[in-house]
Amino acid sequence: MKITAFNPVIVSSQGGEILELFNELGFEKRHTLVVDKKDGSSVTRYRMKDQNGFYMDISDAASVQSDMTFIRMNVDDFDEAHALLTSMGFTTAPGAEVITLKRSKILRMASPSGFQIELIKHIKD
Image (cartoon, rainbow, N blue to C red; front, side, top):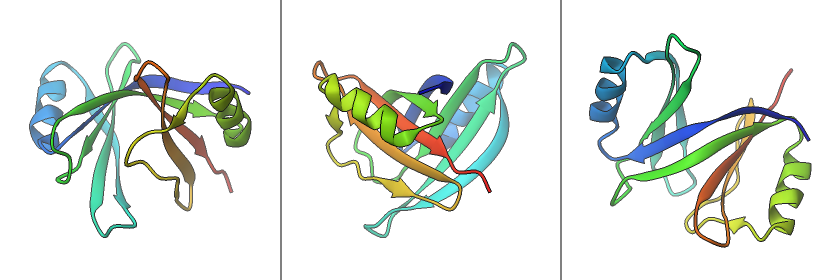
């Protein structure tokens, strides 16, 4: 398994304000993705990068009660990474679900101590 990206993610109902803060810190929006969830809600995700090459993701989700921070981990083999994390005691994070989009597969997982990793595999044509 190869890790292709590893960076922080902030999920908040105040995503616009957080986006502005990181703009002020020198991060620029690279792209935006709207994810429709099974419960009918949606999340707007912003991928940001600064001049030093650091990435930051912000998810604007009206449904969250309080901000969450976790680690995004892109991998080249979702199933292998999932099996590895599971063998280390990770489980599907509370309220999380596998999200399969045209170009990616996503699952947020929680460690035994509580920190969370968002596992992502980009699907290439």
